[in-house]
Length: 524
Image (cartoon, rainbow, N blue to C red):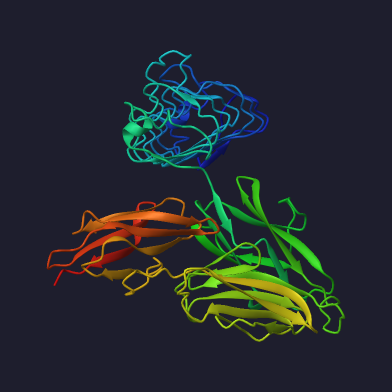
């Protein structure tokens, strides 16, 4: 292949080229004509790329101007030793998914590289079959590299010194059910030796609703409904399609606004015009080309929305919390903690209906408020008092039209477990404190601890104490939510004139988010 690029930032190999020889890019590092080239693209026309000639003349070695390289998956053959050695400005790498091995010193000295993806095709990193292989040092001198994403469910083989000289304190992301313990070993020159963490690849943790319905006359952002998505990484997409389980067709009558982010993200969805006839579309949650979840969106047509129709239609558009002290139970059920007792923390139930329905609530312990109307109605549901019993309390309310029950909603409130002294409640949603008399002995009281379902890596431990012998043990677990009960065990009388106390801390992913203190009063 001849070379004749003009000086500039981007050079793409011509589409009539099918193979590239070892010396092809050697001059790019030193030639005055090409030193401005910082991006190189090798297209799908190329199938062979023989880059290794000697340790000194290999691939892009020593090209300190190169910042971005893309090598098409069509490149199925070629050796990779020293390929990007000492490319000190390189920050963006996309190599062929057809390669099965990454060779010796492939990224050695790439000091600007911060993240790297090892494709699922790779079965070995630091090839042991070629010369000079006893000391592969694939990532030596990658002083900024703090993230490696390995896509294969089977960990590629690595050898002694594959990771020698890599940056300290990075994270290895890999599929959740895969075993990368060899990579993360703390033996000399493996990732654990350099204090790397075990991560996982992308996880879609929660989608708040899988169905949205709009009345026929919804046509602007004022009619917007929300989808709440929780994910561990931001690099997913929401793609709207008029065909379910596909991502290639767009829809002009619906708008989705919001930017994917790590953690909890809200997306607003609304039609841009009224509908004469019913229409449907699907919002696909997509990561790396794969559809992970689908939200069905429906807009009713004018004829089905006619209030003179003899058939009543009512749809729950969404159920969401306001105030963070309730959670969604199975089916159309809303659950409350035992210490919720006012409208400061409620469930919002958003209803789309073509009729003005009635709310029927025969319960006295919770309130349902809101004014039903044609179109969108928001109902507010909340308990009127703490649940001071030892049992769950249940209830139902109904949405009716002309005596016909359109929907039934169940309501549950778990107990607010009270310490024996009767001083206070502790449910860990807010900081609690309890006092116990000096003379109390034995097993005392219970602490109700509610953990949101998204908290997978949590601990509840003694934090600081003037009362080292205090023992708090978990006594039960309610499977319908992450709801736990703890009891104070083997309590002895406090004979000292001074009170003694102990603080327990709830930690998620190593960070304390809430605490609870218990104090036993002094003898005097």
